[in-house]
Each structure stands twice: as structure tokens, then as C-alpha cells.
Amino acid sequence: MRVWPRNRHLLCSAAVVLLAGCAAGSTPPPPAATTAPAAAPAGLVPVTVAVPDGLDHRPFDTARQALVPPGWTVSVWARVPKARLAAWAPDGRLLVSLPSTGQVVSVGPGRVTPLLSGLTQPHGLSFTGSTLLVAESDRITTYDYRDGSATGPRPIAAGLPDARSPELRGAYSHALKSVTAGSDGAVYFSIGSTGNISAQDRTADPPRATVMRVPPGGGPATVFATGVRNGTGLATAPDGSIWTAVNNRDNIADPATGVVHPDYVAENPPEAIARLTPGRELGWPFCHPTGGPADAPFIRDVQTNADGGALDCASLPPVEQTIGAHSAPLGMSFTEGVLPAPYDSGALLGVHGSWNRQPPRAPEVSFLPWRNGILGPAETLLGGFQSADGSRWGRPVSAVVGPDGGVYVTDDLADAVYRLAPPGLR
Image (cartoon, rainbow, N blue to C red):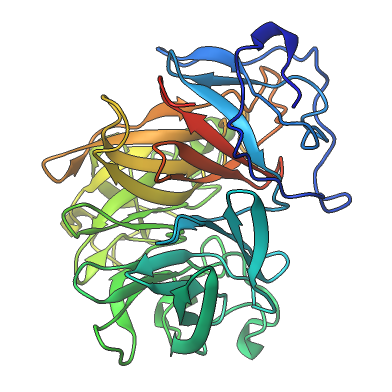
């Protein structure tokens, strides 16, 4: 195991799971080791990422600093090329989706095994009891999961739009879908918009830019929420409510001038984190949230809804919580009663970071406290992936709490799964 000299006390568990190999050319070259780190968010401290022997290829061929709460540690737990969303199976294996290769892999103590192969861009994963839900780009499928095997595939929603849909001619910006099992026995899944302001998505069949619901016991999927541009963060809260974290639109015009200019675009619109109820409308592309972070009201999009005739934005309930514009929230999960205070109850959010903002919005794992059915403002739980010059060595996608009390984070830039351990956990 490689332990960088400045932090030799950061040791990885003897039960480290190794996934050999990294897709050639799948990760850009890391920034130079001398690149200055970005300033640490309040309350976080830098630690060196512990890297086991054999996992120290790029970007871990040089020491990497992460930002964590005092007393926490972080290590590379596995190398998984293009790791996306994750879920813990009932038998304690970590499942990770690989849409780029059409696989779902199973990671367990001492072994990494392909669980499912030959799928079409599998992304979202969720469990209800021993039933595994997998969201492919064109369908939602359930499997019987037992002893590290997934068998008996049963599509519960098929014919979903993706880049192969004839009418889209290969143009689909948000084909990856997410799924969550509701406490009511229903299944909820996202259908992203085809583009930035493709209003025709709202009248498509099935409508895109939505969250859909499959009733308990099966049946046709129906629209649960609309105007959800790309609700890839989709999760069931401890009280059974359904929440989404939304990637909102780009290049929006300043309503005061009607002009698209960088200063306004850099801060607008914020990314919505919303509680979904039947018929909830999140406005896209006619309305967008403003202000925040909490209880952010909707205002008209002057490019698509100049006179307010397309949608009455003032009638929409405010968004419960928001994070910075272009943060790109991806995987979302809830945790309760496992992590130490103040992280004992809340939502974990993989923030991928901006792709077109200057300065870039930094990637991180955010934590939003959960109290009495309300999510509080986001704070950084794991950061340090971006240097002061905007270069990055990692981009978190999702974070899920494991049965051992650690937080497991997928990263599709560094091709890694990290283990983030609170004080006292080794």
C-alpha cells in the first residue's frame, strides 16, 4: 500500500477491494503536483488520500489532498473505470453502474465481479427488499437479487426515450436515467430533457423532463412531476417522500436586460433540490428558481416565456432547497442514524462540478441536514478535487453510506471509489 509521507497514519482497511485496470485514455492527465489547492470550505481540513498498492495509477501516481471534517480520513477503496451511481445490496456488496460499458459491477470484500452485462447505459440503482431496480436509458428493469446474483429480469417500464429513439436522431443530452423505490411500493424514475431548452419535451410521449411513477404491483408509468430538466438525483427520504436534485439550464438571459452575459449566467439559475408530490411542476423551460438557498421562488424565463403565457411562474411553490448554479448534482441518497453528528441525518449529494462556468464550480460531496422533513442548506463533506486554477483530479458522482459506517463515493474522472471514514472508524 502506498501511504504518502506527509500522512503515514492514513491506512486503508485490510479488507480493501481491488478492481484492477483502468480504461486506456479514459482519464485526462492529472494536474501537476505543484498546482495550488483551492481554499478549504469552513470547518474542513486537508488530508492526504491513502492509496493501496496496485491502485496508484493516474491520478494517484502523485499525492492527492482531500478536504474532510476534522478526524475523518479518505482512501481509494477500488478503481472502477467511469464509476457512476451506487447502491448497497442486502448482502453487503456495493453495486456500481457503468453506463459507458453497459455493466453493473458488484464490489465486495476481496472481490469485484461483473453482476450484469450487455445493458443499455445502466445508471440508476435501487433496492426494495431483495429486488434490484436498474434504470437503463430505454427501460426500467427489476431483478431478483440473491447471493451476489441478479436473475429473472422483468421490465416494468419499456420504450423509454434515448439517443436511439428515431424521432431524436441521436440527439439526447440527458439520456441517463435514475430510479428509486418508494416506501409506498411504487417505483419512481427520471426522464431527462433532450437539450437545454427543448420545450417540445413536455408534449412528447412519454413526456420528457419528468419524474415518472410505476404503481405498486406494476402497471403503466404515469407522470409524477413535470418541468424537471434533468433530475438525475432521485432518492426516497426517511419519511417516504421523493426528492430530486436537478441540473438546471445553461446560458440563461438576465431578466432585467434580456441579454445573456457571463456574470448573470455564472450565478443563475440555482440547481433545485425539491420534494416531489403528485403533479409537482418545476417549471423548465419556462420558469426557473432564483435566490435561495431555501424556499427559492420561480421567475419567468424571458427567452422562453417572455409574457408569462406559457406558464404562470408566480403560482409555482418555491423550491425547498438549492445549490449554486451549474454545480451539476448527480447521485443523491439519504442517511439516518449511522454517521456521527452533525451528519447523523441528512442527504448526501454527489456534485460533479460545472463544465462551462468561469470560474468553475468545484466538485464535491455535499451534505444537507434532514430535520423534521426539511432539508437544510448544503455544506461540503468531501472536497479538494479542484485546484485554485480550476484544474481537477476527480469528480464525485454519488455517495452512499455503507454497512460499516463509512461513506463510499464514486468518481468517474479518477475512475475510483473512495472510502470516507468518520473518526474512530478504520
